[in-house]
Structures are given as structure tokens and as C-alpha cells.
Image 1 (cartoon, rainbow, N blue to C red):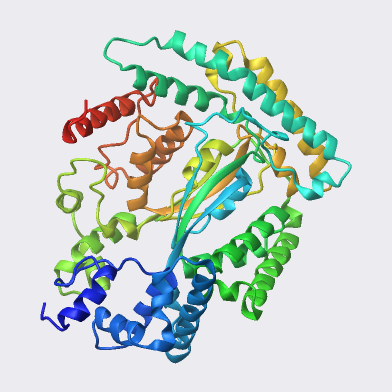
Image 2 (cartoon, rainbow, N blue to C red; image 1 turned 60 degrees about the horizontal axis):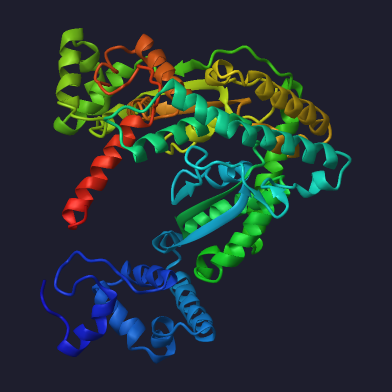
Length: 538
């Protein structure tokens, strides 16, 4: 890299870049809104980004750059953010490119929100990275100052259902808390510790197994914590959608998040509540309301479907994928290539597929983008707990129906074997009675009382590449047995219609296990040991 700065300029810039002599570097020690403004200007100039920062931020007194980065005084920082916002707005006016809002972001914590809310917060496919408190590694039997931690929905608390709602939620949590020790005892007796397992690994595995068994008792109104990192544009879209939601909790979370994000990335979320945001919110709400009315004649509930049903798939998948495999390596139009591929023998097609997939050493060796040229749509009816686990997948299209008690619930076989089935089912039936009473008047708010063991219906529409990724990952030994079964059945459905295309999914695990987390915990032991050796600790 040709040197373009004096020694003095280099020292001024050094704190803001990971290096000053290479073409690849990290920008650091700058507020997110400044990074966004910096990149937005950078995209419209021949200057290097270091030169843009020096000339148009640092050297311009009106930018107040020293105030932006040089003090943690609350008043000065507020003024600094205002100055940065003004600069960003000028850039946006000059160049009119909303995509620059993807160049700055923020971390935000959302604590004491319901499980229902977390699913809405995590619905976005791109631009946001959420992480939620796990029901697998944390017991939810603790009480706060006001008792068990569940959402007290304002509409319900002001209705004739308030007492029944509180009583049912307490019943679910009481049953959950009462089962913690008996279930742990059952797991220890069923899977005794052996000499090759460390105390740490065994205790962690037992805890995870116990959590997995009893999590179905937790109601969807359980309070939990989550964190999100995202860019400004993704936050803006999420917050507007949340403002249009019918649940008061979701709208309140949107308002709170908007307020907090406005303190650090104000330019990126300012349209959430301006006339453009209001218009978009109204559009979303009207679309939802109109569609719901149009669907009202189809509202009768049907049950009895299999766990997974393949309802649609690409009949010409094999030819499409093989054509796409060959496409980058030839000089033919897609239409002609498709004709040639359709005339190949089955052996020739399998050879091309084998060459493309090559030698997969582990599940992370995903087939290339050619496998994105075929689709599969699955209709799934599974418990809300398994839905929450699978909901995390982004590279697909998914929609869910409202959470109800219409489809029944799943009883873990371990509770039956441990003699705890009656208490579990009594709690489930109490929740169903409460849901039926509440949903007659407040169907959306009634979702809070539905336990995770109750089933919900949703669909996945995904390409073959994602079938490989999801099914191999979610069928892995360490996964929860409920979603492992979904992954196994989804893969089985695809194999029925396209056996040649899934012949290379070597890491699909169809086995069943007792202590699912055990091998993973043993690997953690090995990593702990390696780290100790690396840093001279034992």
C-alpha cells in the first residue's frame, strides 16, 4: 500500500484502524452512526476510507469529531451523537441511498420479555443476529418478588379472566418446579455415571436432559431474556412491523427498543415513528386485518396430521440442479443446457452430482449453490418447544399459525416412565381449559397460557441446499429428540422423491440416544484441557 499520510496524520488515525499499512483492516473506536456515515461517504468518493475520516471528519471543526470520540461525559456524548446524526443526514440527502443504514448497527438486550415476544423478535431473516436464554441449560423454577416470572398481559389483567390466568400460570410453574428434582433423579438412575465421564460433563448432561424433559410445562408467557445485534435498516423494519402487532407487549417492546436505539443510532431508526413509518405500520396492520377477515370462512380446526408432510416439491429438480452445476463451466444458455441434461443417462447424472459434491468430510462441507435450484415445502405439526428450536433457521421461508391447544400436546416418554405423567397431564388440561375460556374473547392474548408441549402448525419452504444443512445439523446427536425427529422425517420425505439428490447427506443421523448432550460435553472437557495446556494452567 502506497503511503499517503504524514507521520503526524498516521498517529492521528492509528486509534481508529487495526493497521495503517495494509489494504485490509478493521475500523474501530468509532460510534456506529459514524461508521455508517463514513462508509456512505466512502462509497461515493475516490478517497481511501482513512483519507475520508481524516479530511471530512477529523479536520472539519463543524463535525466536532473530538467530542464524538474523545469523551464519555453524558452531555458531550449526546451532543456528539447529534452532530454525527446531522452529518449522516446530510450524506443521505446528498446521495439518497438507504442501504447505508446497513453499515452501522447496535447490540441491544431485551430482558423480561415473553417467549411469544422472542419469536416475533427473531422472525427477521437477515440483518439481525438474536441469542435467547435457553430452556435447555437454565431451569425456570425461580421466583421473583412477584412470584413466578411470567408476562401479566394488560388486557387479561383487566378482564374477567385475570384470576384464572394467574392461577393457571402458577399451576404450570408449580408443576415444573415440583418435577425438577424427581426428573434429575430419574435421569441419574436411568443413566448412571461411568468412570470415563468427568463430574462436570455428567452434571451438565443430566441437567440438560432434565430441562429437555420438563420444558413442555413452561407456558408461552414465560419471561426470558435475549440479545440482538443488528444493522440499522433491519432494526427499522423489525420495529415498524412490531408497531403493527396486535399484542400490547410487542408494541411496547418496539417503543422501548426505538427509544434506546435512538440514543446510539438515531439516524437509522428515525423513520420508525415518522410519517413513512406510520404509513407502513398502517399498511401492515390493514393487510393483516383484511386477510384475517378473508380467511374467516376457513377457520375450522383440523387435527390428526402426521408430524411432517411434504406438500409440494420441484418435480424437475434433478435436471435443474445438474444444469446449474454445469452452467459456470460452459458457454451455453440455460435453456439449451437444460435440453442437453434431460437427455443424459441416469449414470451420467449421478457422476456429475458426485463430482460436484466431491468428498464431504463433515456437515460443514455444504454442497454449492446449484442445490438451491430445487424447492420443498413441508407442513409440520409439532410442539411449540420444537418449533422454537427450528424457528432459528433463516435461509428458508416459514409461516406459522396461531398458537392454540387444538392439536393436542406431547408427553415425554421419560415422564411416563418416571411415574410423573398424571401431574403433567393435569397441568396440560388446566392450561387447555383456561385457553378455551380466554380465547373466546381474546384469541391472541390467550396464547400466553399455552405450554410449550402443545402442538402448533407451521410450514417450511426451502431449497435442497438448506435441506442438507437443516437436516444434518438438527439430526445431530446432541440435539433435542423432538426436533431431531422432525429433521429425520423431513429428510426421509425428500429421499422418497429424490433419492439421487440426497445420496450425499452422509451426516444425517437417524439413531436415537439416551443422554443426547453427553458426547458434546466430553468434547467440551477436551477443549477445557487444551486451553489449560495452552495457557499453562491445569
